[in-house]
Length: 86
Image (cartoon, rainbow, N blue to C red; front, side, top):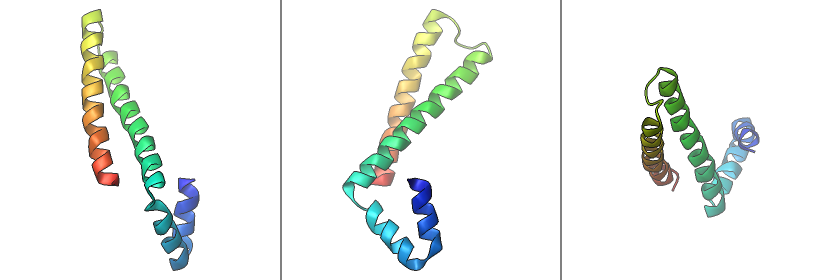
């Protein structure tokens, strides 16, 4: 859907205005924020797994601490993404 919107916005000025009007609706902003939230959590959790591959936080206690850190960092980034989108 977003690739279609990108292609349409790059095709002409009228297409850009149509996409701009569509993306200013609250539903579209909520969907974009939801997608960004999922991607941000996935990114932070992926970095955690890379750190664990390096041998840091492989114990049970380290895993629990790592998961709490991932949730905290993700929450901050998701709130910042919400501020940016809205």
